[in-house]
Image (cartoon, rainbow over all chains, first blue to last red; front, side, top):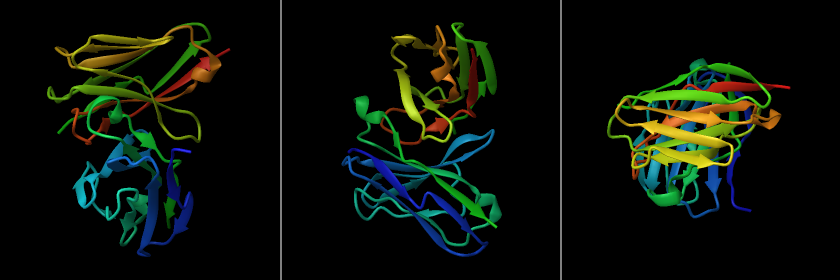
Length: 115
Length: 112
């Protein structure tokens, strides 16, 4: 089944404890992104990647890191989480930069709470 | 950079009536405008999109209109049904770029 997966789905952690949220897609998509969703603010892009080893900042990259060592994986790293990073996180992928390939397919979401 | 404003934040309509959600964007270079639907506890899913070379696109009960001059676009849902209840997000980007900017979302409730 074609899909985007994220792990974990739920995570409660404490300030300063490094964590990684994994994202994987099995559709051979070139493009992958991370978003955070907060009430009243919609979905805000954190980082995106247009290919292996190519990443760029979105609108809210502070406090986050990403890597794209393989086409299928795009982990989100919080080196020192803080309470303002409590949010619902979505990973998304899309096939290509043109035509119907522009549609973004979202993962199921990861609800992160930082105490 | 691009800024997308979406209105209203909440919308309640009677089943069978129409619903309209409006978005404005700031960057005249944007040329791709998708709409996503997010049901409660689920992931966002694309329902319709439009490119700047057309003014209107329709898919059964949903349609999107685009006014490039005014830099605004709208989602129209006709003959609303209970399963249309969800949060709807508009977005804007440039084809070929992956920097997608979303509006704040509209919570649509269909009353039976």
